[in-house]
Each structure stands twice: as structure tokens, then as C-alpha cells.
Amino acid sequence: MVATLICVGLMSVSAMAETNVQTVLRGLVNPSSVSFSAEGELTVCDARGLVVVLKDDQPVNYVTGFDTEHWKSNDEGKKWYAVGPLSAIWSGSTLVVTDAGKVDGEETLLFFDGKGKADDGVKTNSVPATTDDAADKGEGNLTGMSLSPDGSTVYVCGQGFDGKSWVLAGDIASKQLKPLLSADDNGIETNSPMQTVVGDDNTLYVLYSGAGGKADGLIVRWDLATKKPSGQWTLPGVINPMGMALVEGDKFAVVENNWSLDQTNEGRVLMATLGEPGEAAIEETGVSLNGPVACGFGPDNRLYVSQLGEEFDKPVGSVVAISGLKD
Image 1: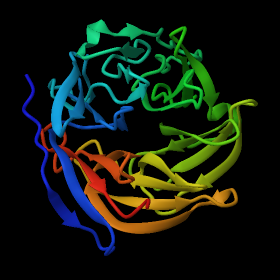
Image 2: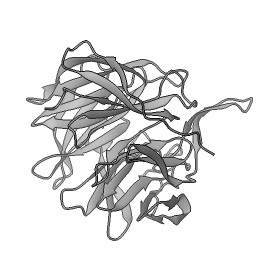
Image 3: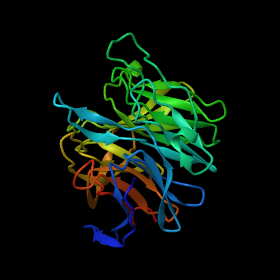
Image 4: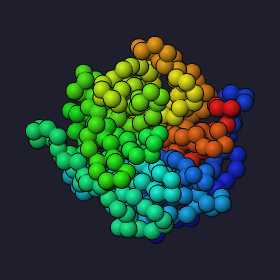
């Protein structure tokens, strides 16, 4: 069903002398989230309806058989930009995956205690429409998960109705999924939440991508006790940021996707220092990729980034590891 994935060596060296980029996994279709198991195993979502885990330097199709859909279609029946599971995260030995290939309002989180099929997963509830707007079909394209420090809650970005832009919370024990943070209820017009990162003092950082092709992305720090934003930072000149990972303090790695539904575009790997709320300080790393999507630091302190490759819907996607950004 799925082509063999291949690990390869050094791909390129960026403009920064101390930073090099190595391809660690290739042959993926529209890869999205990257994360790591407790054993340090790279875990990647693939639009063919599977989650791939790199075990002993060999890719394993760990969970397969997820539903898939397409973001775009025309009157002639052509469909493009396939979507399957969009985010996977480990809670101890349990793998939590967003079942993002279903239609809005039917997606759930699935929990797996071992290798298998999507149907083997224990699921949460789905989240239906939260407004009376006819365009609101419920939450979908669930992505960007992170885990609370005590391991009780998983935070996930919803890509349902843009009039609410929900961040959801999933209770690990009860398997209940519910709306938690609404950008629009708090006067935040930028939509498309893409990634959550747990902060100190009961806070959650959320990266909002904004409108396609525009440099209107935003990082919001949420107070989880009050469910109110406690800081907001624009990302000047960054077009559709989709991935974010904490470096240290108030410094984050951010990947710019430069979104388009017709083709993949060149995007950058950047550093964003937040400082006082307002405008983040953006630093170039010198690394550019083809449609980078998500990122996460591995146990070796390298930043792992998934990229779509030269063309979406083809097995040309990959994951690269970038050294020299967090030492």
C-alpha cells in the first residue's frame, strides 16, 4: 500500500556555517506533525492515512488505515491536497493521533497502545458546531498537539469554522474533547491555529497561521486559568507560519510554510524572540525548505522539520534535521 521510506545522509548546508541540514526520512506524502516517543523515536504523520515511526533507523508504518480527505476539488471531480492524520504525540507509551481525514464535526482523537490499524484506537468524542452560523460544521483538521506537564491533558488546534478558531482540550483519562480557547471571543482576528506549545506558569503558546499567502501570523500566550490571552506577538514578514518549537526562555523556532493550495512554495526556518508583547524579533537561520509544515526538537537537540517537497500529493515529502539551533 505504501512505498518504502528511506533514510539518507547529508542533504545540504545552510548559509550559517554552524548549521547543517540532514534528511533523515523521505518518501512521505504531505507530511505534517513531527514528535518523539519516550525512546526518542521520530514520529511523523503522512497523508496516505498513516503514522510512521523511525525505529532503529528504519521507518515503520506504526498505525495505518486512517480516513483521508482532500482540501480542494473542482466541478470536474478532480481532488487535490490530501489530508490524513495531522498530529501525533506520545503520552508515555500511548500514541495520541488526530483523526483529521474525516469531515469537520466528525473528527476525534485516537489513542493507541501499540502498532495497528486506525480502527484499533480508542476515540474521544467529536466537537460539533459551536455557533448558529450555517458555515460552522464543527471542528476539523485537528492539528498541533502538545501535552500538559502532568500528562493529563492534550491541547489541539481546531481548523473548523474560522469565526471561532478554537483550541481544544482532550482529557487523557476520560477521553473527552471540548473547546477551550476561542481567539474570536477575545478579539483576536487572526485565525488558523496551527501549533500549541506548553509554557511555564500554566500558560499555553499558540501559533496562528493567518490567511493564505499573507504575512499576518501571530503567537498568542494564553493563561489557562482565566482562558484569556496574556500576550500577543506579530511575526513581521513571515508568511503562513505553521510550526513552532521552544528553544529556551521566550525564544522559539518557527517554520514559514508560505501557503498555497496550487503548489508548494519555498519557506524558511526562523527564530522568533518574543520579548515584550507586540512585535517578535525575527532572526534568519539561513535554512529554506520546500513547504515546511511542522517542527520539533529531538533528543539530540536538532530541530526536525517536515516538508512537503517539490509537489504535494506525491511521495516526495521528507523530514530534515537541523543542527546548530539549540546547543
